Length: 308
Image 1: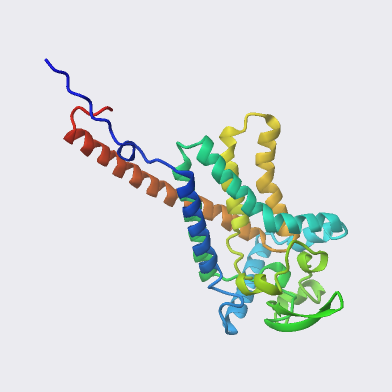
Image 2: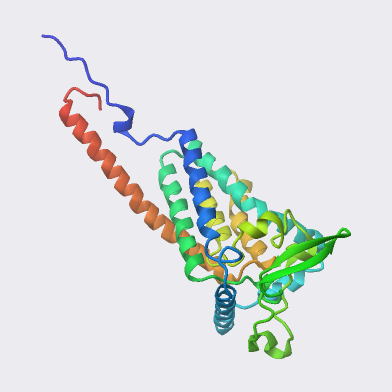
């Protein structure tokens, strides 16, 4: 009797394989589409008085709701730390760099160290970001730092002896009784990036042209930071690493509030977007696994001598 030679099962049939170069291309393409879509719904990209007005009115809704539930303390928290210039400069840099750098780093750690769950986490990250884009489109929100800033337009300022034209995106020309709450003359938030400096300026150059100043709800800083914590936690064996993993989302929350880039509700929105991302990402992952299982079963049926 002659033994039949087993037919090897192709890898693409047996399981979903991840290739680092393919993941880089996917991530790059997704981030390009995310940036393009995110910046389509507000700020300088969408012209017309309705966008700043809607974002300001939505900010008033957030403030009223937070006051109703006793959560509106962002301005008080910022005031405590305004004397510490070095801390605010550090937070400005952290806000502009860490959320992207850390997320990319964790992405590749997952790709190398947790391949079994990488597709799920990748899908969840993409779905969460997609949900955030929907939030930016349906609920443009003026961040605290812009509430007392000049209304949309341009102004010429002198920087290092030279005249520089800057874009303005604020709401100081829009009347509201909330501005005079408890006898105040303004909301009282400080734009720490403008006052203390940071890695870039939202009001001039390419950043002003490409950024959406009203993409605040939900906070992807919180969503991405929490995603990173969930992804890395099983790999954190030492106590100091676990402490750092837990500290990262907490520090990010402190950062977005003390720099007046977000409200507390934006952070809650980021957590909800993360939860929705895992639900949608899980559904997509399950669908893909069933597709691969069916493909594998079909191959095994048509090749009885195939290796399992």
